[in-house]
Image (cartoon, rainbow, N blue to C red; front, side, top):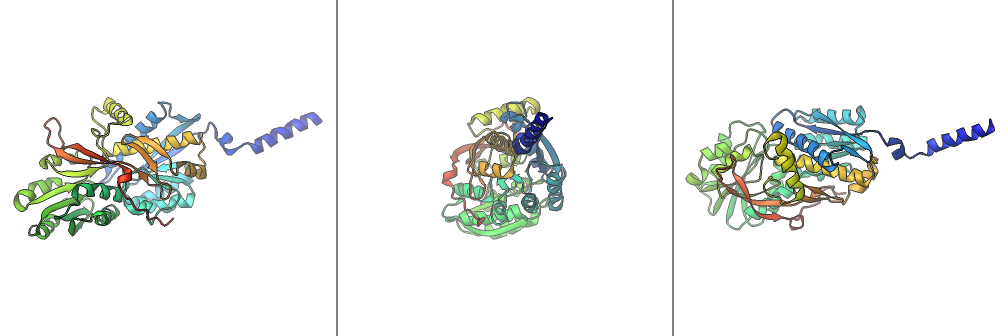
Length: 398
């Protein structure tokens, strides 16, 4: 009896001393992806989700496991509404016990979700919401972002547009994405002059009045006149801009960043237009990009799009971190692992900046070519703008 008691006590002691990681081995790693599956940004959200699943599959070699733990993905629709996104994230952390959350699509939804991650002390990997404030003054230590921010967009576009003698009017969404984007554009515009800012609601269907205000402001300006568009969601203003023949009638050229391929159909009307973009399947000559293109063509018979690459990148970041922690999902361990961590993506290498957890990444200066082989205006690479070329400010006051 005495020997049996000693054995029992030893077993109990061993169980008590077992590490949380050892106890967690074999349990699923739960990841929530929250996106605007309905609403004006539906197309973006669906691409992000497809890319995320493809990225997990690629990063795990098709096993969907890390360190013997199965990756389980829960999809949630925030409908593009901040209150819905906030509630969905809280439910994911509290009720479904997810280890990590990814998303959302829209910046206003992301801003509502940030305090939830802090409350539950769980990581929220922001993809693809863009507003600077997400990794700026609204940031907390549980927030990482693989998506580019407004300053990265602005710094890259300044390469093409910020020249002496250029006069610019901007058209943007009247939300955190649009206003943060314009604020960043103004901070990076040193040589050109921004003379007008036009903000319209997401979901706007009639751009006539807004574009007329831009025309009235620009048409008599001296210098090279540009309309710079920073627009998110459908419908987009490009078809209306083409109909108005701004360059032919008023000498106003269009400048914009990249977009999803359906939106870039309208770019065919603007051959020679320059700008900078986050991703296009034909540009990065990188092994992971070749992989996502091949993987996407199999089921969809079409190339991966702008936000597909973003979802894929988020998945690569998560699997890289989990491999480094040997499957340990302890939040503090993940944070210390991910700060300064580099990982491969379809765009090439990204690195989470330690100070604000923003992914430092390349952008791509392009010029539009009207190629009859494609339904959209083809962005031809002028040059890769590397992270070290862009002085992206740290604004989170950590």
